[in-house]
Length: 574
Image 1 (cartoon, rainbow, N blue to C red):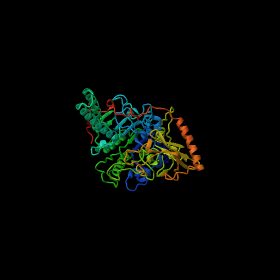
Image 2 (cartoon, helix red, strand yellow):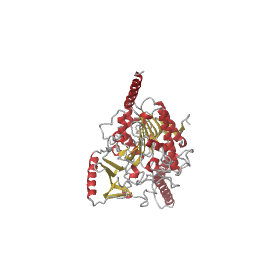
Image 3 (spheres, rainbow, N blue to C red):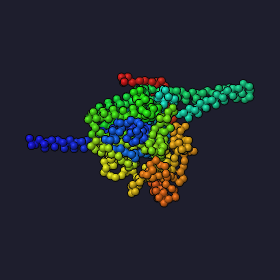
Image 4 (cartoon, helix red, strand yellow):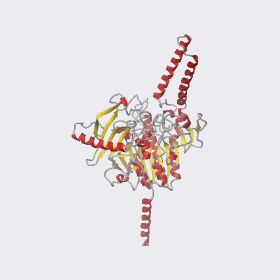
């Protein structure tokens, strides 16, 4: 019997060594437009997020976690590639759009970019994405799928290739291209008046233009106007699409069942892959407008549909975490939760509660340099590997997940390009005192709005602002009356000299340092040199969001029927 304790010890040692060498599964939970001030463990006391808060208690909470952009498409491109969107052509710019606006466009995540899914797939992982993509579908034809998740390293995709919007909710008015639609309606009125004037002038012999020219001109302009009005009429069928892998399975999407279906798909993926390492990226449709919430959660919060939507997402997270726990995968799964950027302050009509909260931070979604647009919740849980109930207030980035999970899965980031994401594990485990980000660069479209400097010698984080938005009305903190604040032109402020903030003492960016001080000059000179070095690493790349790559093209429209009659609903689902 004396040998029995030794056998128990040896068996335990083997199990520990196996756990230490076994590749972990990776669960990534990314909210859409969630403000850092909307979450209980980050200070919110009126919206219930018990499951997110549980992750923070059981893991590491990052309080200086930064998105690479303040809008969906560029931020998600950076998250998946570990690279600033300025390097991949995914920034948006003044001569185009800031995000992908249609399913049927040729722009998207370039095929030569390497996502973390591609790296982990090469290491034997099963890789899946469920939810929102918003990084393009096709390039040259309806079925080339060059930008599709399955061509970027994922084995499985269920979700929407674009994003959620008012057009997907029949009870809401359209929000897409409102400025263009207003312009189109104005052009139509001008056209009608012009044609009637020409007809009257011709009839009364005041002009000598042939009837044929008047008729052809009227026909051409009528066709142009009708073309766009038909597109907007069919928008819910063409943009609100659900795909399973390469197949369109729901068109238009049934928004009422989307939350439950995402949970069911996540649980099914976990169950299918419980016996091997997997990467599962849950890209929530919540908390994007129109804040659509299923009837079980409507009216439950103190913040109208916005709060209801957050509480429903928190329930979804709880269901997915419960599935991980029930399968016995908790101790070998790295779980990460974050938001793609800051909360949407301009919100929706009808209620003061239909907008996000970014806590003490100034600005919000679409404001590329302001802290509220880019500082987001970030939580990582891995029992036995990461400490529990721990808070880290060092600059980290969503891009860091790229390098972190690539290395944890046994792979390496590409060596033929600059990777801006850093390995988080040394910081998370307390093996180093500071993050590896000395400088961080904050863009709005392709314009550099701000730069952050972590000066480790003084334990200070500085931030220089070159450009910031003009709020509407002045001092309001957002651009009310507009969908988003602008990045350039007459609706921004160009700071000459730049503004300098000490974020360590002034995280709300209320009190800039005097520009005539010696400290101001020293910090600005250091940052300017860093900007010059950063600019030297940038190369010209095709702009994926320019006007031509982001214009609706019927040849590229995903369709489950005979175009333009695209409608279907997947059977045998609840």
